[in-house]
Length: 193
View (spheres, rainbow, N blue to C red):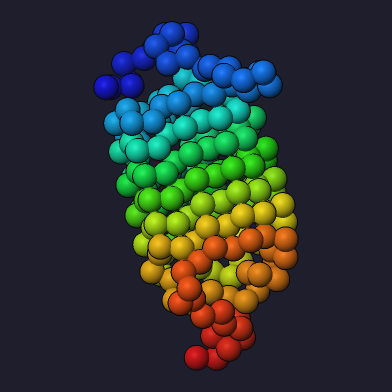
C-alpha cells in the first residue's frame, strides 16, 4: 500500500478511520501490519495534522527504520503509541517532542543499539516504557532522567550486561525488568575505568 497517494486527511480517514471502541470516547487508529515505511508515516502524520481526538496510535509490525525529529508533531493528545516490531535502528532525540500526554510507549522488537540520553526527556507523563527485545548494549545513566511518572520499564532481551545504579535512584517508583545477568554499577566506578 502506498500511503503517499492520499492527498487529504478526509480521504485517508475514509479508508483508515479513527475508531472509538470504548465508552471513554478515546480515538484509536490502528495502522499495524500495513507495510508502512518511514515516508508513509511522515505523510500520514502530516495529513492528520493536529488531530486532537487521536489518543491511541498503533503502528506495530510495519517497515519503519528511523524515527525522525518531530515525527509526531501535532499529535499532542496521544496517550498510547505502539512502534513495536518494526526495524527501527535510530530514534532522533526530538522524535517525541510535544507528546507530553503520552503515558504508554512500546518500542519492543526493533533494532535499537543505542538511545540518545535526550530521547525521552519531554515525556514527563510516561508510565509504561517497553524497550525489550532490541539490540541495546548500554544505556546512558541520564536516558530516563525526568521520567518521574514511570511505573514500568522493560529492558530484558537486549545485549545489556550492565546498568547504572543511578537509574533506580531516578526512578524510585518504577519496576524495572531486565535479564537476570545484569550487573548494576556505580556511575563513578565506570567513569574511572
